[in-house]
Image (tube, rainbow, N blue to C red; front, top):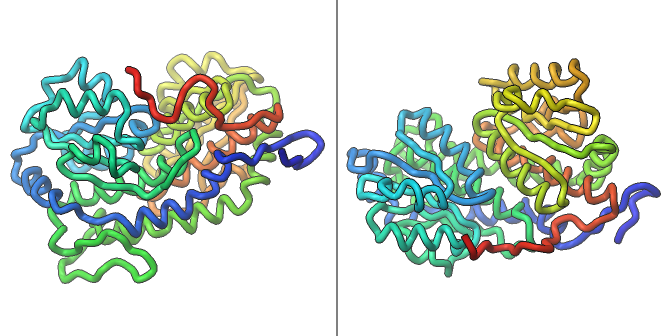
Length: 378
């Protein structure tokens, strides 16, 4: 245990070390991303209309990580359904047909629901898997696989989550622009930059997206350089808080949902993620001094609405702070990055919240007592 001052103690365990390892994991993932040999054929089927819908599925943070992709695909007019894997296999089995493309995300690649999906599908729907585990059932049985390079993780999803977001960001650019595998067989920008192409690129192209994703690791590193100060500032800010709500819109729903989950499992404190609009439909009535609302500013499209929500909460006696590039608290202020990178940055202050809540009581954040890293029971 490291005493940071007389009031707050931070236990610097493997969970903290995983958080600090996120820049390396992002760099490794970007270097390792490539177009799997089987992906161009899937992209041609999608462009040709043989695949009529895309189903996005996962559980926990793997599910929430799909929100930015869901928004992107639908903005391009691609019919996309987002379902938890358990709901998909038990209540929507008719979607498992030859006209469906499934994007399945699982950090372990072997959670109970993913294994059932692979069994139930019987290779009818084509599956693109995104996983951190190359010897998993998902990696072996998916038609195409994008592997992340987060490495081993102690407990709470942090580096596996941000690297999944990176892989999904690049996958999204391929799905909306078609078969670009012949243009560039490597998606990694690395230090040498993206491979030049004779094909004209446009917004959302794989080449442009890879260039944008190269911003992620340096931006994450800049924020985490002051991680201890961030945690301490939030520990003071959250004094007396018993209930936390994390709210946002669009792609920010990824961080809102994941944030609500990881706060619960890493600190055993009540938290809930939802849309900013949903918060006004009920939870707004709960406002009091023991409740704190973290509002993600998000992208330009709905930023003004989210800023207004913070103002309205405060005017009605509640406690709220904005998370974004213009946040009032330095711990909630993230570097300005491209929209494709924003979901990766948005989760970092939430990770600091988990450390802050644990520091208030001197407990160890991120250590599971009842569950396990991989959920093997439905």
